[in-house]
Amino acid sequence: MTLDERMKIAVQSYADGYTCSQAVFAAFLEEMALDRQAALRLMEGFGGGLGGTQEVCGAARPGPFNAE
Image (cartoon, rainbow, N blue to C red; front, side):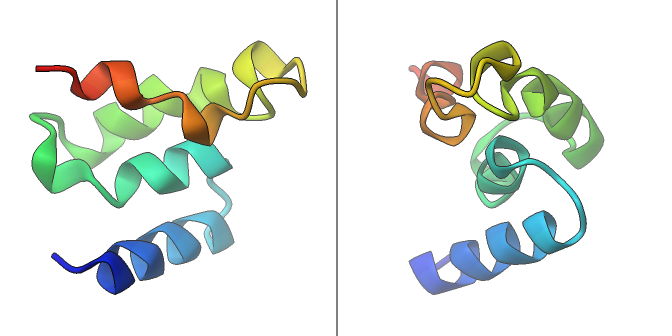
Protein backbone atom coordinates (compact mmCIF):
# COMPACT_ATOMS: atom_id res chain seq x y z
CA MET A 1 0.00 0.00 0.00
CA THR A 2 1.33 3.44 -0.85
CA LEU A 3 1.73 6.32 1.56
CA ASP A 4 -1.03 8.21 -0.28
CA GLU A 5 -3.40 5.28 0.23
CA ARG A 6 -2.53 5.14 3.91
CA MET A 7 -3.09 8.87 4.27
CA LYS A 8 -6.53 8.55 2.66
CA ILE A 9 -7.47 5.80 5.12
CA ALA A 10 -6.26 7.90 8.06
CA VAL A 11 -8.09 11.02 6.87
CA GLN A 12 -11.30 9.07 6.27
CA SER A 13 -11.08 7.35 9.64
CA TYR A 14 -10.62 10.72 11.35
CA ALA A 15 -13.56 12.15 9.40
CA ASP A 16 -15.61 9.16 10.58
CA GLY A 17 -15.06 10.30 14.17
CA TYR A 18 -12.06 8.30 15.30
CA THR A 19 -9.24 9.98 17.25
CA CYS A 20 -5.99 10.89 15.54
CA SER A 21 -4.19 7.90 17.05
CA GLN A 22 -6.94 5.51 15.93
CA ALA A 23 -6.98 7.00 12.43
CA VAL A 24 -3.23 6.68 11.95
CA PHE A 25 -3.16 3.16 13.38
CA ALA A 26 -6.05 2.13 11.10
CA ALA A 27 -3.95 3.03 8.07
CA PHE A 28 -1.42 0.33 9.05
CA LEU A 29 -3.76 -2.51 10.01
CA GLU A 30 -2.55 -4.79 7.23
CA GLU A 31 0.86 -4.83 8.90
CA MET A 32 -0.58 -5.70 12.31
CA ALA A 33 -2.08 -9.00 13.31
CA LEU A 34 -5.26 -7.28 14.53
CA ASP A 35 -8.72 -6.82 13.13
CA ARG A 36 -9.96 -3.25 12.68
CA GLN A 37 -12.24 -3.14 15.73
CA ALA A 38 -9.59 -4.57 18.07
CA ALA A 39 -7.01 -2.09 16.80
CA LEU A 40 -9.34 0.87 17.20
CA ARG A 41 -10.21 -0.17 20.75
CA LEU A 42 -6.51 -0.61 21.54
CA MET A 43 -5.71 2.92 20.42
CA GLU A 44 -8.71 4.60 22.04
CA GLY A 45 -6.79 5.55 25.20
CA PHE A 46 -4.21 7.46 23.19
CA GLY A 47 -6.72 9.99 21.83
CA GLY A 48 -6.33 13.56 23.06
CA GLY A 49 -2.74 12.88 24.02
CA LEU A 50 -1.71 9.98 26.19
CA GLY A 51 -4.58 9.36 28.58
CA GLY A 52 -6.31 12.59 27.52
CA THR A 53 -3.55 14.78 28.97
CA GLN A 54 -3.31 16.94 25.83
CA GLU A 55 0.47 16.44 25.97
CA VAL A 56 2.20 13.70 23.95
CA CYS A 57 0.24 13.11 20.75
CA GLY A 58 -1.26 9.63 20.72
CA ALA A 59 -0.78 9.36 16.94
CA ALA A 60 2.99 9.55 17.40
CA ARG A 61 3.12 6.87 20.07
CA PRO A 62 1.96 3.56 18.46
CA GLY A 63 5.52 2.64 17.41
CA PRO A 64 6.11 0.21 20.31
CA PHE A 65 3.07 -1.81 19.25
CA ASN A 66 4.86 -2.63 16.01
CA ALA A 67 8.22 -3.57 17.52
CA GLU A 68 9.68 -6.75 16.16
